[in-house]
Image 1: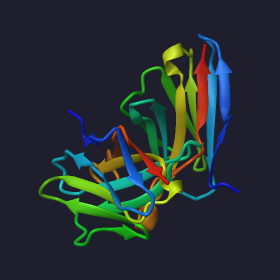
Image 2: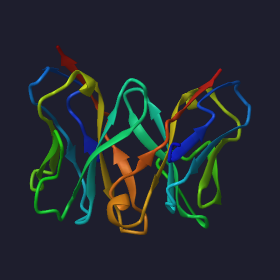
Image 3: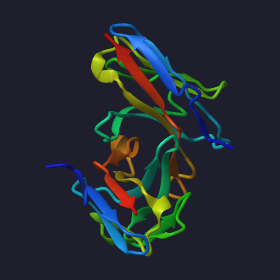
Length: 115
Length: 117
């Protein structure tokens, strides 16, 4: 089984709809991240969380919110989706020491289209 | 200002030859880490190699090596003996910030590598 899973893998929605992307991990890591990827722009950080009670805004948090329900779960919500939020969304985790600190483990990505 | 710069939008290499993908970074933090990721057409992000700012030696992982030149703030990825399966997007990234504080990963825009048979 994959260490970092994302649901759904693909989603098409309409402008104004609320949508939630979910991420679960079995790696036991405290740190979790949400990124979006747009063509030609690389990955940009939306939100990150270093533990259940610690949530921080990233580079492009406007229009998004997150919830860290448990150590293993980190959800990203678009309260009112707009077309320019069409992108590939990645969840990632990392440890806080050792080899796991020196790598971010990525989920498979969620391809979101907002019409 | 961009923190990570990858100046090569696309690169071509012949199978079995070596290729260098460029990455320069900008930080005033003395403690930072540099990463390279591969993204094949299937979309997943695959970790390749890591270099810490205090590491004395260049990192190596199989056919991947990182040419770390601290004074020049460059962290180029070298792929030896290219294979057709190396065709993908490659992203350089940097982690900076106080450990346990505001640290996060910043990515470059990527280089698309095509390996020709």
